[in-house]
Structure formats: C-alpha cells, structure tokens
Length: 145
Image (cartoon, rainbow, N blue to C red; front, side):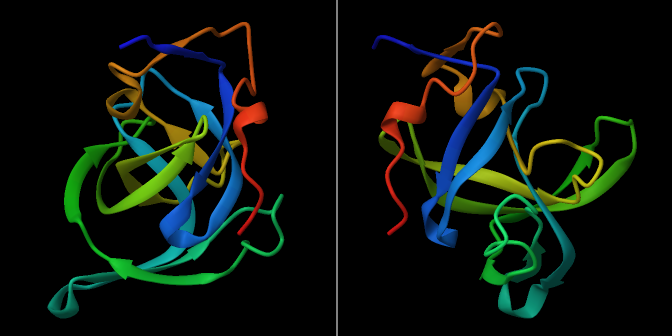
C-alpha cells in the first residue's frame, strides 16, 4: 500500500461526534490521538464519558456537552511528564477522503495551539509526514453533513 504524504498541520473530522474540519497537529512524538476538552466526567457504572468540547475556532463546537461510550481508561505520561489517567473513546474519523476507526484520548490541551493531535498509532503504515508542508488534506475535505 502506498503511503500518503501529509503535512505538519492537517484537517480531520470526527464523524461520530459530528465534528467537522478540526485543525489537527501531526505529532510523530505522540503515541496516540488527543482531543481538547474539559469538564471530563467518567460514569463507570454505565461505561460512559461526559465532556465539553473546547475549540474556540469553531464556535458551534466550543462548550458543546458530549456523552459517548468509554473505550478505556489508561494511565499516561503527558508531554510535561505528569502521570494522569485519561479516558479514551473509539470513533470513526474522516481524513484525506477516507474513513478510519481510531482511538482518541480526551484531555485538556488549553496551552496547545490545536484542538486535535494526531499521533503515531494512527499514522503508522498509512502516512508519511513532510514537515515543510501543511493542510495537504484540504482538497479531500467533505462539507459538514
């Protein structure tokens, strides 16, 4: 399979959450994907996670309360070295005109520039990153449903 070349910043849609055209940072140093949100609450008896989306660029998403099935709760070391437990969700995303099933951690990324981070597990065996490029997926973007 031929790998697609992507840039350091791309656009992704999380179909199951009805979030379209999110700005995402491609991060080959990160293991997994991450979505910026806050007020994260885990409802263990019902295996659900509740959170508020944080994306000031897309006013219709910012602050929207979401309720989705919890995929897993995992202990992770953040980029600043702190150990924390993060909830993960399993969703369908649209990227470069194709739909993929992927896992995304939910975390507060308020000090970060992009609301979405795409990590190595999603990229491997599919994409090569050209850090001199950005938004190569733009011609493949589908309009909001």
